[in-house]
Image (cartoon, rainbow, N blue to C red; front, side, top):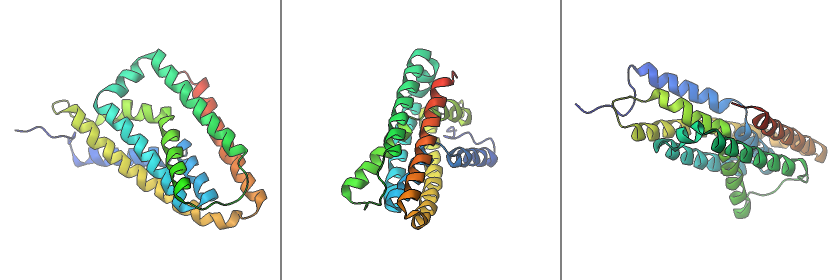
Length: 210
């Protein structure tokens, strides 16, 4: 009999994974901050570009997890520490850009859309939380007797679907709130809050040892 691709001890195992994924995705972090910032500054279309970038980075992590690279990375302290510091540096750079961003709305044209995708991709790729999730949590939902790589790909795809839904909701509501921050003063406040959040995450990455 062919082994299942997913760990189906009961339907509740998949329900538990989906619920966990939604909680992880909905918890405010660098990706959520980037989506909300893009929606408030450049509108819902730009925010959805950020979402696409985040999902692309998740795809990279899912692929790495299916090959066992994520677990290997997390198990080598020196390499993992280097990745953490690079991620913190990138988030610090994004915080600097947000802090000094000029007030004013921009149109989500082709160039802006590409920048939005790059923002989402870089932000999520720099997130050590994503590394920990794909390397640490996903393997716990796999079936020992079935191909691990295929299971990791399927679980990664399921997580990406949850992440896409959650971030799209953030983008929609933040895009609707855009009209309430039309003044330059309100826009500067949004920039400062977003920059502060990104910087706090970057500092947390640096000072956290595990």
